[in-house]
Structures are given as C-alpha cells and as structure tokens.
Length: 192
Image 1: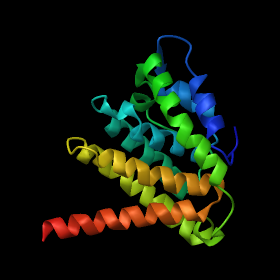
Image 2: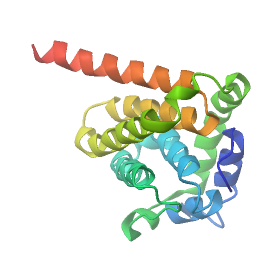
Image 3: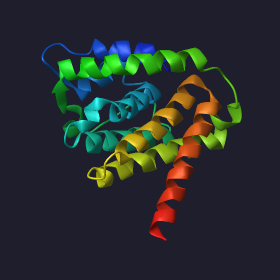
Image 4: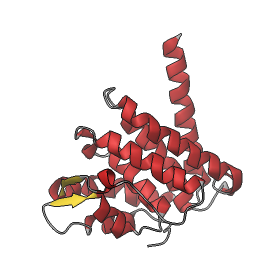
C-alpha cells in the first residue's frame, strides 16, 4: 500500500492482518506495506491513543516503533525496518478489533475534513521538522510509561503530525505543533 490520503483503509488493512487469536506487529506492518512509512507511523500513533495503551509496556513498544519509523523517514529510507522484538510483539486479535472499532469514528471524521492546505507545513524543511518531532515524542514514551495519559497525549500529537503528512493537510500539522508547544509550556510552568 502506498501513502493513502485517508485513514480508514489503514484500519481496514490492520484489521485484516490477523490470522488467528493473536496479531503481531509484523503482521500489521506487512498488511500496511513495508514501503509505506507514513501509514505505519500513523497506525502506531493511533494505537497509543486507543485502549490498547492500557496494556503494560505497550506504549513503550509503540514509542520505540514511532522513533524508529520517524528516524527512517528523516534519513529518506523507502521501506520500514523494525527490530525483531518489536515485530514479534503480539496482542489479542479481539482487543485489536475492539480498538479498531473505536478508532473508526474519528477516522471517518478525519477523512471527511482533511484536504490539502497549508502545504508549506507538510513539504520541504518543515516536513523534516515534523518527522524529527515525531521521533522525539516516540523516544519520550518509554520514559513516560508510568505517568498517566502522557503517552496518549504524545500519541495524539504524533497522530496529528502523521495525519498531516499523510493527507498533506498542514492544518493537522499545525494543531500537532500547538499541542506539543502547550504541553512543553505546561511542563515548564510546572517545574517553576
């Protein structure tokens, strides 16, 4: 699957990835296509926002995957590579199906409202900045595993940034930047 401009086909592909009671990250990556970095990034980010994030260490594994995928985007790779321990990580197929069902309503909304706009935010140097911010968010997730909701907030930021790149809609990228700046400002205020 090449970069699509919608999220619903990604959810459909991920839902079809399972061949039994368990679904591995490798099966999901294969279903999305190894040469589709942005769809893989958005799916992993959405997974962190979903109820699956309640599974112990799930956010950490997703954070590592987000960092690796974003890093590969930054260096211009045309296909995805993830280490074996991430690719072999499995979840119950029933839990995956329930999470995908929850994600469908927001996915339909995103697909409906997205359109090409603010193109300068999703092309050129700002696209690289977006990819770097996604990588930093992913790297932070394992360290924030024990702090409630932080991984989900970072997953939301990465989801917005990745969806902006996927749909070529800079408005979503701008919203992701705004949430990240607000989060950073909140942390600085808290530390004072």
